[in-house]
Amino acid sequence: MFKTLITFITLFFMVFSSVQAQSQAEEIRNILDERDDEIKELLGPEGTDYTQEQRDRIKNIVNDIIHYRSMAQYALGNTYDEISDEEREEFVDLFATIIRDNSLNRLDIYRAEVTYENIEVNNGSAYVETMAQLDNVRTSVDYNFEKINGEWMITDMTIDDVSTAQSYNRQYQNIIRRHGFDALLNSLRNRAARAST
Image (cartoon, rainbow, N blue to C red; front, top):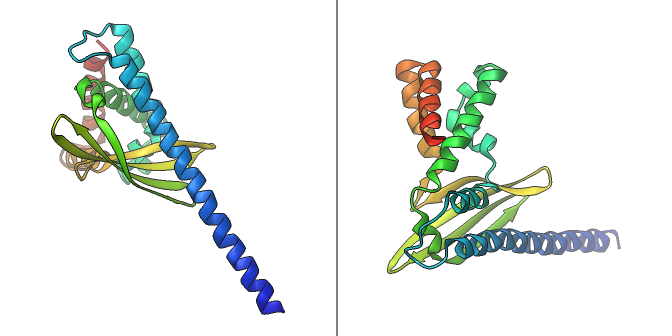
């Protein structure tokens, strides 16, 4: 009787976990679909000239589900824990400014048709594999999600097998090894200043 009860409880939690994961996967897909639809509506027909207001709105939609602190922490590696609180806050702000500015470099990529290859959810984190097709070009775009303060947020994006966070990590570690953290911070200040003009 006891073994039967244990088996029942185990099966119940396995089914519950599976249903919960499916529900969360659907939630994440809806978040990405809604973002995609909003962007496409703002973009309008191909060849459209965009006002600054449209560009700002697109930038907000693209970036508002990115958790910059998580991505910045990975990009900076061990140095993140070694610098002061003030330096850390400035670094995260500069990093976010640069990422947000880069998101508008090629607006046409947001016209791509997106198909979902796989969504895996596990203990408050998720990995989403998608394929974006624009004209005859197919590009894999994958997302790492974490549930932070009750909301699903992107902590990394991998485009054609190139991780955004890892790419920045390699760049930043190279600068830190050669010239130190202060040189990296000054470089980011200059880039962020150009982005905001």
